[in-house]
Each structure stands twice: as C-alpha cells, then as structure tokens.
Length: 159
Image 1 (tube, rainbow, N blue to C red):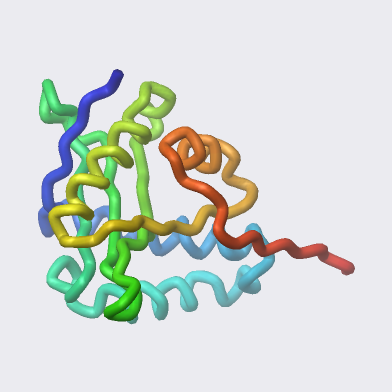
Image 2 (cartoon, helix red, strand yellow):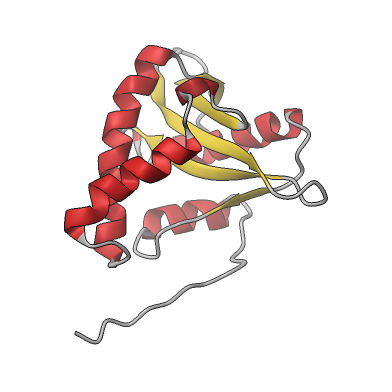
C-alpha cells in the first residue's frame, strides 16, 4: 500500500495551488450547471476569498501537502476546515488532489487515512465532504475509505 505523510502547505505551494484550484472549482460548478460558465470564475474567487481571506493563515483552515513517505516527493494536496456548531464540530474536506501522474497507485486512499490522524489531532471526531456526482473515481475512493452518503442532491435539465 502507498505510504504518505501530510505536512502543512508552504506559501510557494499555496500560490501555485490557489490559482489552479480557482479554475478547477469554477469549471466543476459550470459543468454541473450550478453556475453559468461566464460567471463561474468570479463566483469561485468570491467563495475562496470568503473561506481563505488570509491565505494559509486563515482561521480554521488547514492545507497540507501530501508527500510520499519514503522519497518525500510531493504527490498532491488536501484542504480541510474546522466546521460546525460547538455541539457538532467536525472537519470538512474542501479539496484533495493527487498529481495526475501519481493517480491509481493508492495515494488518495493513503492521504485520506493520514488526514484522519490530523483531524483527530484537531480534536474532531468526524470528517464530512462534498463530491460532484460525475466524479466516479472520487466517489469510489470515499466509499472504500468508509464514507457514506448523508445527503444526495439530484437535478434534471429541462432545456
């Protein structure tokens, strides 16, 4: 099995990730029909600006670089936030990415398992996440690591 460790993301990694993530997030929302394509990038900027107003120093936000345990090579990233009311605090995964050339080797699964340790260290006992319905690879990953559906949103385009 793949073996990874998570370390806090560095500023140089953050700036590269941030620009790419804005575009990816906008495209995902446009692809689902949730946002009009011409508005998607601006809406993505607004959401990221709200969630990460101070970049890496944003309160309650934790961004990690996923590293190969043996070689130390960067394999991707994961972003988790502390969420919920005082009586239901939990972690919420906003983003997990594995480099394209490293996918299919178990690093996503290993990263999700490593994230559990980080979340426990934050004093939280639950991890929640959202996955776009068309992302079958991610759906399988989450199911294989013990996640279950808690809500299902569905839509039908009539145009």
